[in-house]
Image (tube, rainbow, N blue to C red; front, side, top):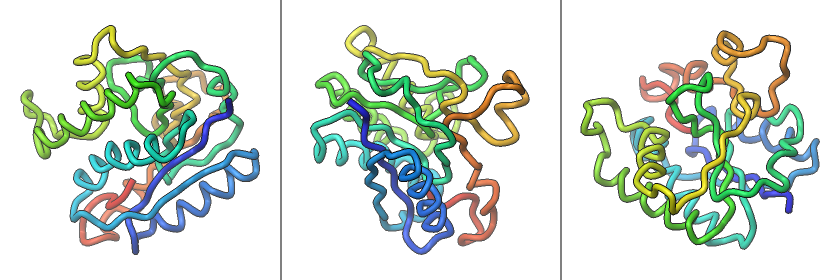
Length: 203
């Protein structure tokens, strides 16, 4: 089944316009979508950690696989791998390394998938600012922790780099002749200092 594309943005920020561009790209390729607005929680980290709760809400609302995309993304080509992928969750690790990226995430809607998202929310609430190793508690880091804690109870599949293609970064570490499927345009960098003096107030 072709997944539903979901996402969110903080109200009254430049990300609202990003959401419109994302919707247009999805409609061009024939993908159904549900992109919601949420209140500003006051900081980039709080707003991005809220991603776990948004995804929980979408999983409960729809009885089908979903693909979460950050709203500064653009669908360049249809992500056909996701039409019949067999896993609970799928995402990209940056440059095939150890850093999980959360700009494009597939969720099957399985029970294990729901359990994972609950674990993710729990970890975000436990570490709202810093992780035990003193790194910032970014949402992708807390998601990686949740996946590791789930162990064999969760089926994770690695996606190609093209599925979370980050402008100016991915091409430094990947085949320059390949073409992005989902291109992430780095809104946090582009909107730096535009919103309450912080970097990237939304997702």
